[in-house]
Length: 174
Image 1 (spheres, helix red, strand yellow):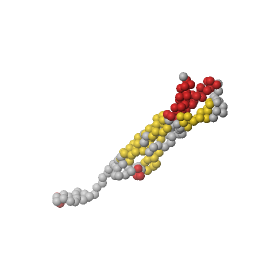
Image 2: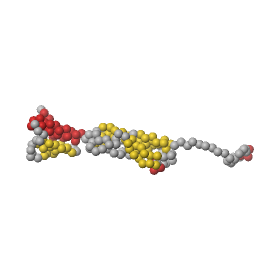
Image 3: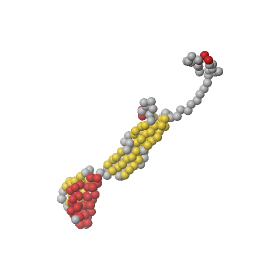
Image 4: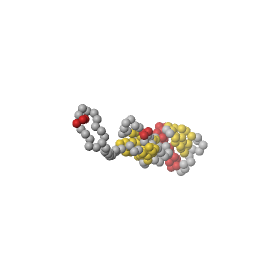
């Protein structure tokens, strides 16, 4: 410890030129927020996340200074059915940052065109069973915004869009 600078420094003297000091240096708060994601129902289990955003880095730092590996948890992991689920980030470590993990949302939606076709084709199968007492005369499959259905043994299949199928069911139910 020494005195320096200023015109009046000669007016002062130090009783001691040694000393100690202690300080508590707190880590900085870093918000890590999972980004929301929307997925169309496909029957496959959801895994992972859609990335994260960071808020609170200091001195021009970025996620490169963090230890650990970004991982995702929450109810979204393994989710298959339509609904709303949480995506919760985690996995980082650092001596300089205190983490505040904020959840995101996964929304699994139903493809309305594909679901409508699937529902209509299932209705046709039920109608055939009610009229003919068997499901063998009418079968269906659905993929994306179109579907196929077969009527009667050996009748072949026809690809239809949701409007055509819907009109057929409407005409039958009138």
